[in-house]
Figure 1: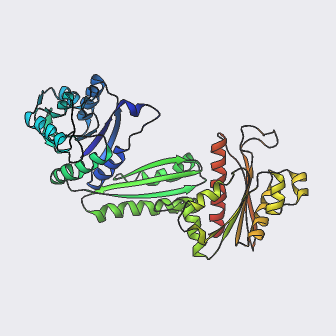
Figure 2: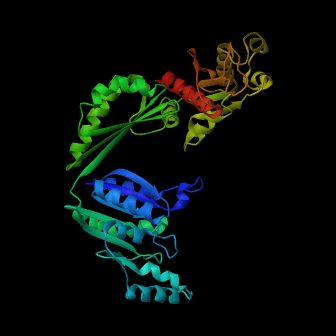
Figure 3: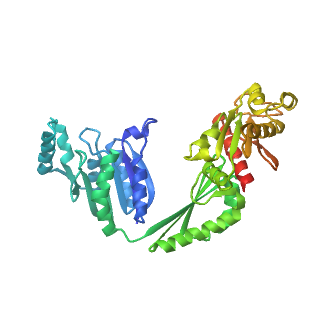
Length: 414
């Protein structure tokens, strides 16, 4: 069984609001073994919404619609679904009475347009709303020769979640074929999407029953492996088997096999080895430290560090020799190494990380262009460094640099 979610509301087609209900609905449907194949956002226009409903019912078994069940003129979900199915909407007098009784119990006065919330699609079952005035609706119908399920749920998240769990989940458990979805999330750092895919495509294409999705972020690749089977152990075995082969092929580029972030993994390695880390950051402006300290318990392994944006502070806080800066420039291998060595000594940590670069959009030269980054990691056994040239805007270069720095620490700890 597959599903589509339609989020209704013109406000979600602006930069100021976003659909969050679909994340919750997707999670709950996946737990039942239902795959969500499509998500649609539709504005408050009857024709557009009816077309979206009609199209969804032509391609999925289960349709979940959130929003558009209120009392105002632009609440058109009921009318749109009825139009798509070619049926009528009838106003239920008992529901009207319930609306007025509910308002009276709260010592509220409601206007007559609230009666619109008592409009019932022909063939639908009403879903009581314990937390709001707009009831939902459940449809079990036939389109063409195929059985279709449709749920109309209110837009406010607390109302939607309560109605879905109390009214919809019990019905779905009786209908949905028993399937279990197993998922694994692998993450790899500092390898390109195309490079990773060239390595692993010959492997994952052999697993026809496992869906493999590759998501590229800045300096990061996320591989989502999903398999649905009638028995949980069968699904888990398949994704675990594929995950193992992918990890073997990508080798030490893979830093996480259960979806952890790079900063979580770095802190895990530090704690496991009883080690500590200090950082001296120039172009990243404290981003490495922010990422590390966003993880609870990071104080056990992360001692701190300094944002050394100016050359003066590179010398005063991280002990960089001014002659190095004068000779090689602030953005150089030599200064990155000195930052790592200096901050480790000043903070008394096991490891030191130094990052320096040109984030742009200004400041670059032919010799040292925008995107040039040096990162170095230091410990008692010596210092390693890398030189990278990252593309993108200022924010992108800075994040790439923080990712490179953390990955360098991870590899040193491995």
